[in-house]
Length: 241
Image 1 (cartoon, one colour):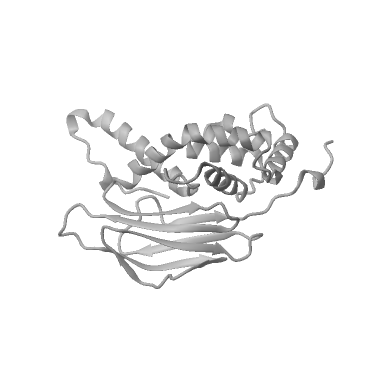
Image 2 (cartoon, helix red, strand yellow):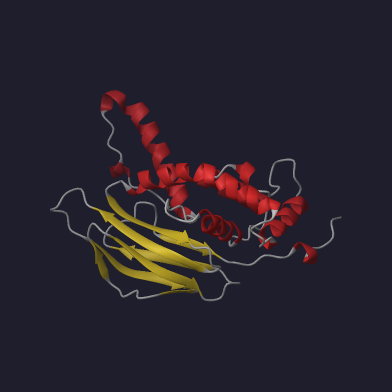
């Protein structure tokens, strides 16, 4: 996903510092929207937020630990809150076993999930702040927000116009693979209000993607890998060598 250079207009005398700050901010937004978000809304119940976070992580079904490490680095989630072994000294088997155990633990009162619950309460304000900073930019935004239910998420759009004379953005078509969305009638226009559509992955064991074609570029990118919600329970994993 690429951002357009026109978003950053540094003053020449402070060009280097401004470019660095702008680039870092855009990279953060790009990463945040590439993977979608869990339910970071400040009004969400903490238990529901924890369940949403688990779905967000586990639907990815990371094949190797480097993919998990890339995800954590890109989204800004502190690595210590995930009870998954993906550090440089951890083996692939250790990663696979711990990831499967994490995703298989559905007991929200387990020690693992109670720790996750406490940690999310600490970091969510920061995540919400980062998200709000991204969608505060003028232009067209689109993002995915995972619910606490497997395979169910919201597809959201917001168009921030620089002034009242600017034309609304048009969503021309949304190409969906293995995804169905309720009450999604195309094309449609976006003024200054947010539009949200409730979507479902049809086959939760298969890859799901979306691609948005609009009258102006989506600032954070127009293609989305929704992921797939499958995992292998620890008991079914091959024995460690």
